[in-house]
Image 1 (cartoon, rainbow, N blue to C red):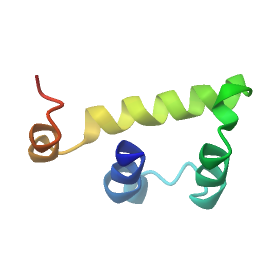
Image 2 (cartoon, helix red, strand yellow):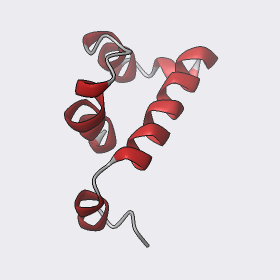
Image 3 (cartoon, helix red, strand yellow):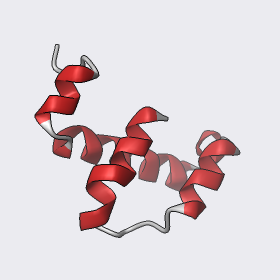
Image 4 (tube, one colour):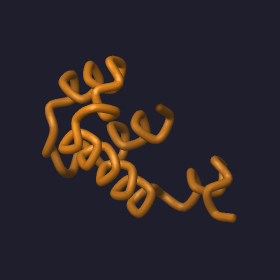
Length: 65
């Protein structure tokens, strides 16, 4: 869930393409396990965040191996 939090901190303010409470509720309910469209949204959000995340955070999180 850390990368989702980073998405809302860094990516979300510049690209408001999801309503924040909705996906968080669905994530807690594990909706991505039974809804392929929501799974695709989650995966694209993770990919977008990993690409747009500031380099200093990637190093801190050991994502730059």
